[in-house]
Figure 1 (spheres, helix red, strand yellow):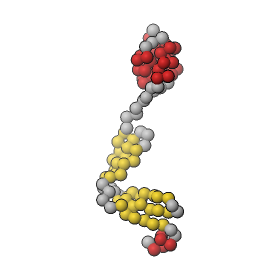
Figure 2 (figure 1 turned 120 degrees about the vertical axis):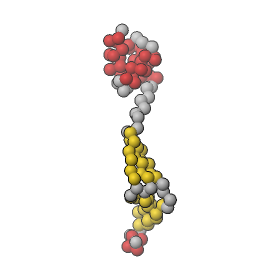
Figure 3 (figure 1 turned 90 degrees about the horizontal axis):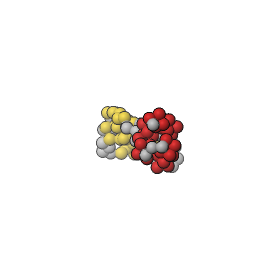
Length: 106
């Protein structure tokens, strides 16, 4: 520990940590009852997480359709804005596929 202090590294245990949650684009990692330490090195704060029970949860992707995209699809396919939004959601925002899909129906 003394050698770390001489090198300018400070380490402090974060007491009473119940869980750590890491959220990515498509999943959530939950670590319960971990040991967490805050390490300061050259002005940077680093968190070290060890032990604990880990579980992963898959996050549902939320697709938002912009009004501009819905209007474009609506105009091109000759359908209502609501139909255009549904088609965009079904095609995961792919404008060309949504238009083609709607034109096949009419």
